[in-house]
Amino acid sequence: MKKATFYHAGCPVCISAEQQFISAIDSNKYEVEVVHLGETSARISEAESLGVKSVPAMVVDGQPFHINFGASMEDVKG
Amino acid sequence: MKKATFYHAGCPVCISAEQQFISAIDSNKYEVEVVHLGETSARISEAESLGVKSVPAMVVDGQPFHINFGASMEDVKG
Image (cartoon, rainbow over all chains, first blue to last red; front, side, top):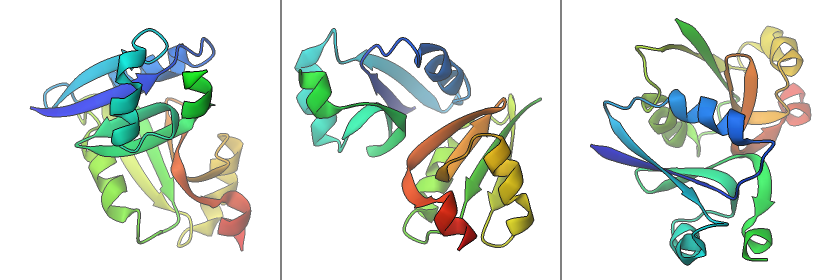
């Protein structure tokens, strides 16, 4: 099973869009994990090390894809 | 079958990333169409009407998601 990790920071405007996006991922091929960086700030450094520059972003097989623009990682760190 | 349309402009650096992204989409739920706007410029107005501001972008159920940043639609129009 490949891994896809969706990082976000709770942007209320984007939640429905994000859920729609995640529902399109093939769950037979990918295990999708959703990480709320506002609630689990301990994983911010993990996201940054994977190349995440802004949220929402999805890392598929270790490669970061930035989807639209909610907030920069600097904003997430507050 | 829902529809997902991936608009791009041939950015060679991004092709492999895009293919990886598309392969993650559940083909049992979504019919994925890939549109190269550099080759089929007649569909630029279609993309714009769906809210696409830059490429690569994927429109899922009529909602645009901009994935990373390759080029603005102004650049695509040349």
